[in-house]
Picture 1 (cartoon, rainbow, N blue to C red):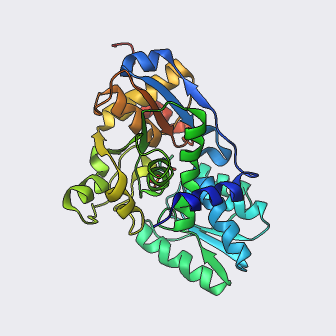
Picture 2 (cartoon, rainbow, N blue to C red):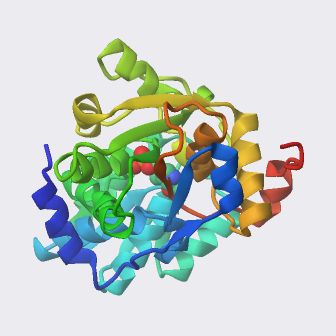
Picture 3 (tube, rainbow, N blue to C red):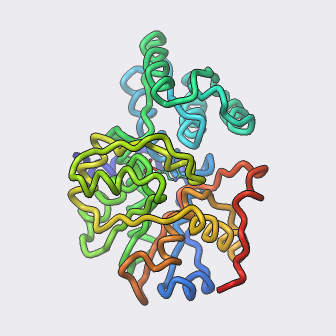
Length: 320
Ligand SMILES: *Cc1c(COP(=O)(O)O)cnc(C)c1O
């Protein structure tokens, strides 16, 4: 298991490249949630998500170990982050994406000089291809979450929260494969275990919820949740034990609740956040967590939304 020392090392390794993102606040949101809410704003991070933290830590390490090239299998935030950092470090990157990836995602990767290879429509097809390419090119395959360097990089979000919100009572984090929350859990629980850390998943992508209940990694079939960063089918072999050890609770939110939170933040706070980030705010708005009149940090994990899809996500927010 990674330790908080690994996260301090990651912070030193990535600090020249990543932004220390701001903390935003909204009185309207705080009132609606009956808690003082602080938004750790990784949607304002380089490449538009926290994924650049883990990717930078991992790719830097791989290059130090002699990697001649980098591969990844993701059309989303991880693919963009890996392409960006490989370009910064002058090492060629190939990103394996599904044949049905949207044009704007392809363009985002190409804008960072990432080479694109299209392969199948599922991660079960893409991941072996990305690993095979890495082998052929004396390269290193960069996984999206189940890796100690990735987890330690994502954990730097937790160290920043400790510095920026000194009296935090709780932190609420969206959960996909669990890289982000396992890093944050390690940073927080090994520094100040009194701070609660809660995970949130969409009801229709509840693989980690089921895994925790079953006490073993449990996979779900493919899901089409609007929170597209959380569509993983199961938690990771390395991330899951960290959740079992440290997580205070994990709760679920509906697709409609995600839409409402997304729309509220857009309308009242003028921030474009991903549905994947809105899940954590939805849990607070809908009172899923045992928190009242507390200082609560919610991790806004990213802000990459295909703007042609925004219309599908917006619902009225004036019924509160
Ligand atoms: C990847 C991602 C997540 C989930 O992170 P995991 O480390 O897979 O749990 C949440 N939100 C956004 C915006 C993401 O890109």
